Image (cartoon, rainbow, N blue to C red):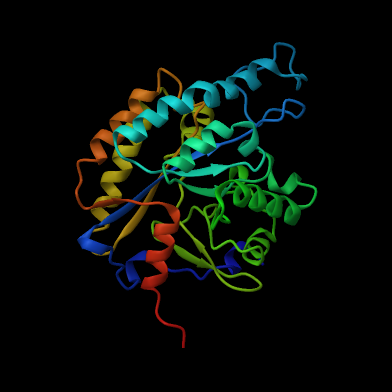
Length: 292
């Protein structure tokens, strides 16, 4: 199916209102991306351009830049999550569960939700066998957590033409790659619908810091501005907002305080629910009309 064949066009202004429990206006979820970068492969992103160009192997500066996030940056961020009593969702590569077991253990001990993020940090269009990659990711998370993941976030939000079909067939219930709405949507597949839960490109530290090259304060400025508008929009019908972070980006020493300022500001709102993806999924399903 083409992307526009997987869901009907639906203007948000014409939909029946969605209601969150307790009179809340907005559900906010935080996604922490944990990746393992294979030093034998070209690095998914770079902080330094090689002086002679090309793709050196090994690429020590760029591999180490990412590795710092998992050795140090994550633990800075974890202290913030604990302090503000925030339970994020961990989007993790299947291979990263073994390489960074201490990170996965800290998340599991705190009751975080785990979702699939590819078996390795590779564009899904370049994976040799997509179904096998998804199966391996599922098995790795199930083996570590004791239950299969319900949600999926493609590495770099990448998909093939068949990704939603395969995800549904392999037991996934929601996907984050379709960043096109402030409310969940239903995506058609060959078998049963997938729920598309609002993720983010605009409030994603990769976009802001690595692609657009903003200074660190842009994260808090943009996150708070985006929140205030979506909160305003939610007066008549509930909305969902996502914040996406990576330890090697927002866990850097000069950026962490801007993540802290976001949490400090948004935690002031009493009618905002800090949910996981599966909590959004269960709520949205309960809003849908009963099948005829």
